[in-house]
Length: 492
RNA sequence: GUCCCCAUCGUCUAGUCAGGUCCAGGACACCGGCCUUUCACGCCGGCAACACCGGUUCAAAUCCGGUUGGGGACGCCA
Image (tube, rainbow, N blue to C red; front, top):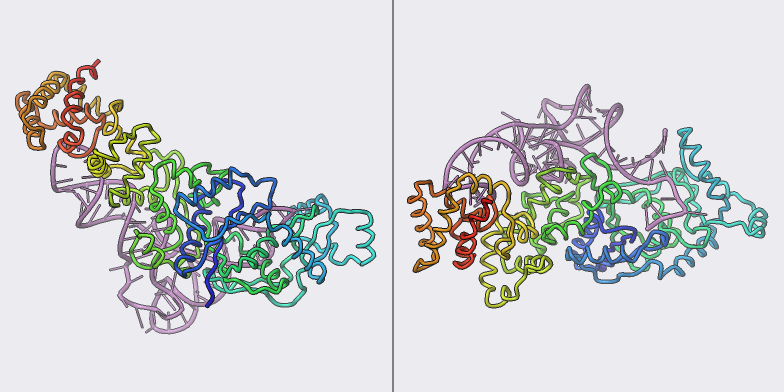
């Protein structure tokens, strides 16, 4: 069998969204699994809406996800001449015809049909134009589009979808579709097929919204005398109200860029995406890329659409809880050495990175990440919830301030006293710091928790965190003493 | 309106093709408990689904028909 050749053909009319990323991922997985190639093709024939920013955004999103391609990016507009030749050939061979119906007429007919609840579709007015009519209209210089002449055959045309099974449609239900605009520029249906033929695409994996296009494209392959690729139509991703997700109605939350900015681990996001409509058939949910490539198969892609479980204004989950949970899983289980570069990047962009973290304090950096990551949801938490570990300008949160500090006014004496004890202690170790803290509690006649939680509030600003004395070790004697001495200022 | 696709816990899903091992398994979320100086993690337990109706069969989540529901397409967008 010859090599498999897949393609991901985004149209650069917006950012890369979840649905597009998932399509790209499935294509990538299949290409990698079969040892084939993935071709990236930018379908920019809609010059009105295509933008450079959008192309950059899509490329950036794919790069972030780690979805790499073997050929391209090709730009569809670079092959315009080839598309026109194909259209001309179809015209010459009588497989297409010129249509002089104006946009306005068509629009009127369509609306009338819709209003009368009748079948919508081109009525074939120009299909039966006589040669004389044609010559006359051309002589008049009337603008014309080129329509594909759907064969008037009995029965059905169809194909074997790798996900959906047999898909077919009666010839008479397909209307003559436009393949070239009146300005001479070819349209998607044609360009896409011509490009797939040229790029020797063997498998077309795309969304189910292309199913009806596929029937028309089948006709195009036949007319162009080209072999058919394998088609696989994956279910769409809907929102929790079962509407197709889109930039317009959902905004940034469906953009891959959003997840990059919000501190998702790229692979974790892929892992979430792949599970939206596919499962390995057993109970596994986490995969390395090798494992996923191995486990992936077209046949196990679900037939029904899945829901991106996002609830606007949910105070607890800023996006699909499953996505967050998968991210958390990777955040706390991946090798610290692999996580460190991601944290470094985030710290850098917040101005919290110190070069020593990559050199003499590297071990400290890795240990700190390991200590605090267990409670975080995203990489961004290292600079928000975990700010006190990397900077001195961390904020004291309202809740711990009230609950753990202001509630015990005496802490403004106890904590500085503890600071003194820490400063003069012979050793600043786990055991010694804990012993001194408990001693402090005993002298103050309060439960150790009062001292410990007060201390946690002062040195980290947080209500919760790792074991207190582990924190102290990571922070170091100097910082701890300094921070504890500032306790009284928090009471004002 | 026409055509097409789909239908298992709130969500992602296993099980459907080869009917019995499924009074339906896992994960997320939720609720309880254990652990604990805090909060998490972890562990233990709980809640929670075969859309409906009919048929075939000794036996149906699984096969067939219909109904309902959801989605998609019907562009000189891609």
